[in-house]
Image (tube, rainbow, N blue to C red):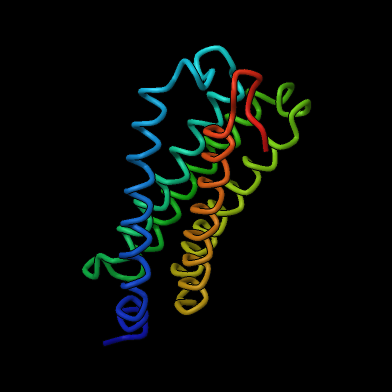
Amino acid sequence: MDGFEQQLAACSAFFIATAQIGGGLLGLVFVAMTFDRDRRGLGRDGAMHALAQQVYLDFLGVLVCSLLLIVPTLGRLNHGMLLLAVGGVLAVRTVRGMLALRRELRSRPVLLQRFGLSVMGQLFFLAAGVLLVLSRVPEAFVLAMCAALALLVAGSRSAWLLMAGDDAGPVA
């Protein structure tokens, strides 16, 4: 067993747990946003709609990246490239959403903070991918664990913001 496979085995319980948590929260957010869309104002408030999409992407990112990191047969380089691809797609999607809403985000700084925390988690996955490609295995796994935790926190905080709102709008 090389260093990568040892690290993969050592961290598998963590990534199994985060995949389960991310998948469960992803399902809950999907159901909540589907059945309570009108009361949440997601159809008429562009910023809140974008935040709902971001929550979904955060939990999806945790699920996909955690699942990637429990598959032992891909190898270090393939794991690194896949983390780069998934982290890159998530980060580009988030930044694109932020740019589309830049006027609304300036007037609602709490939403900007939520997007910022998501970007941080996604960049951690990107950095973990780079470190895996460069054979820096222990550091890559630490960053991947931080990324999963950051995205779970970001998604949970944003989901709370979406769910805690009333007719006057969400509260922090």
